Amino acid sequence: MPVDKKVSFSIWYVVLAIIAIVLVHDFIVATQKLEEFPYSEFRTLLAAGKVAEVSVTQQRVTGKLKAEEGAKEQKLFTTIRVEDPDLVKELNARNVTFSGVIESTFLRDLLSWIIPAVIFAGIWFFIIRRFGQGQGGFMTVGQSKAKIYAEKVTKVTFADVAGVDEAKEELREVIEFLKTPEKFTRLGGKIPKGILLIGPPGTGKTLLARAVAGEAGVTFFSISGSEFVEMFVGVGAARVRDLFEQAKGKAPCIIFIDELDAIGKARGAGPMAHEEREQTLNQLLVEMDGFDPRIGVILMAATNRPEILDPALLRAGRFDRQVLVDRPDKIGRLAILRVHAKKVTLGLDADLEMIAGMTPGFSGADLANIINEATLLAVRRDKEQVGLPELQEAVERVVAGLEKKNRVLNKMEKERVAHHEVGHALVALSFPGADPIQKISIIPRGIAALGYTLQLPTEDRFLMTKTELENKIAVLLGGRNAEELIFGEASTGAQNDLVKATDIAKSMVKSYGMSDKLGTVTLDRERQPLLMQIQATQEKGDYSEETAREIDCEVRRIIDEQYDRVRWLLAEQKRALIEGAKVLLDREVISGSDLKAIMDNH
Ligand code: ADP
Ligand code: ZN
Image 1 (spheres, rainbow, N blue to C red):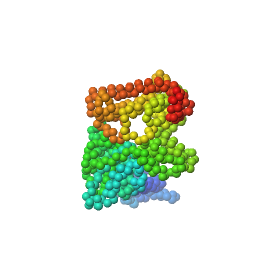
Image 2 (image 1 turned 180 degrees about the vertical axis):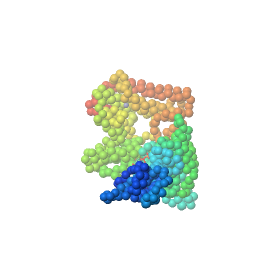
Image 3 (image 1 turned 30 degrees about the horizontal axis):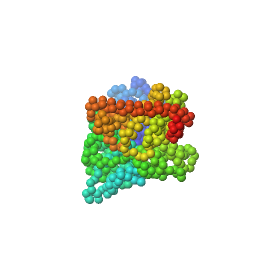
Image 4 (image 1 turned 60 degrees about the vertical axis):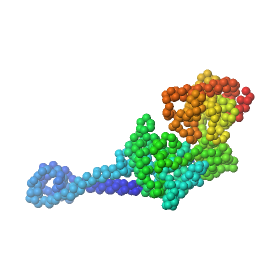
């Protein structure tokens, strides 16, 4: 905060000034040529009547000698003071002017005290300010990580958020409340306290929360749960307290906690209960219970893993209102593309509707990224407008990561990758109704993929049949199988495919009840297939060892079955596989229809 900075700055000015004074003082003293005598010599000179005046301090006797004949200047001297009770008598007897200059040493002594004290206090002050206020403050290096961001006016409005109309509808009431809390309470409306936005990453949860603040014209406080993770015990809790304190002072306002799951994981979960996280979570619960939404503070939070949240967070009076922010459908994608395309100049050929059709499953962030990439491409190509070719290439880039042309594969590797990719594609082409193959490439992209087969669904899918899932597994196994067929053995390149295939098989057995042996049950209570995603579930469900073994057996059976099917299928198409790989090696990229033509010819 700027105020703190000013305070610590002025302290540093004072310290500097004092240091400067002391240095100047020492400099002046040093420039007068002081001669250092032993005390005995001073006494001799005094006895000889050569001393003109002295000043006596606790430690020293400093003074002037009488000017010697011919010399213009009086000599200055200093000597260490020795315990000498007769000194004053002697000085009197010799008629020497003497004075105590205790003040000046007093000042120096004082300064030698004050300076370190001020410097120390300065450092102390600085550390405390830097590393947080309140309890446990300055013991915590690294606390600065969990920053509270306050935006006085967010310029984001609902017009900037597209494709999530239902979520927007649900949040309208919150805006109404923040605008006129009095009216709301007078009419006895049920005031929302905590709103949890649930959805995959990049679907615009943060954007929505900011838009709510923007629409209502209130301050937007935000903090991210993941920043709490590495903190020392007690610090996270202090930060939470601080956050609510600040927000209450600025009501009406919104407090937004991103990645709530990082703090809000179920207590006692995980291999070692994380004490810091528990304290932070407890503090959050305390604060939530302690504030009255009528003061005009609304708490919002986002997560993409609602199933791992501590149930206490979802209880009445806490995050009891949940808003789903899902990936957009085709109309939503078009709307999002349009929002972001407003900031760039589009060519007449830039068919956003077509791009929306090509991108099922993309999040808002992915779509924003497409427009951005396309603009960069257009700039690089010296074009005035962003055209369809740029948009299409941007889609590919976002799908597969950036092209890495400089990665050179040796000839053997290239051949292997070509057969592997054609293997995937041939299997996919053999299934009627499978998602069409857009293109097959052996230009390496990103970190992991040496080649890729781009298979995009034509429509949004909300359901998949058992056969479709099995086909998906088969396509994934096609790469490895083609390698075995042609080269007699598999390579490490197929590992990622196997992981994905196994995940699908596991979901079929555990979540979708698609195994005859285990029957139509969901063994996977922890996961809600809410967002229609097939994802790995490593957590152990609540079933026995024996069931676990049966699940493994079933997964293996499903994979084996598909593997046999693919082996048979590819053996049948071996000539198309060889020919397709040859063309692919030659051209590096071929389309799905190219391969289909080769397939039909062999
Ligand atoms: P989340 O919080 O869900 O992970 P963000 O709100 O951070 O996602 O979204 C990241 C960026 O993606 C936004 O700043 C915005 O540019 C874009 N974006 C995401 N969803 C949308 C949407 N529904 N409408 C418009 N832009 C979006
Ligand atoms: Zn593969």
